[in-house]
Image 1 (tube, rainbow, N blue to C red):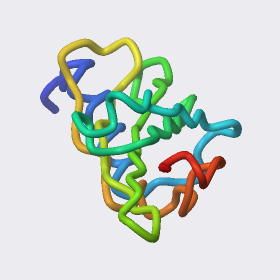
Image 2: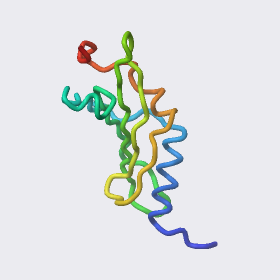
Image 3: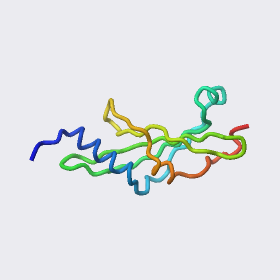
Length: 115
């Protein structure tokens, strides 16, 4: 059987998780984007979720993190995929999957942070 390099095994574990995510770790982080950056970035909040202890064949477990952005669209919050990455693995990221976006809260904690 061919040897799969460690980073490829980590990426495979992360993409498998992101395609079919289980519950993320407790205490996800909502970060408010400064008002002066709203127009440039196109959103008001970023949510960071993570899964620690993701198993990787014959390697130590990894931590996978993902961003979901929240934008106020006139009368409701909409969510947008950000990037997902493996903590400690440089030069690799991918778009946060729709499955991850779908499992996050429908609105940020301060629902008035758009005015």
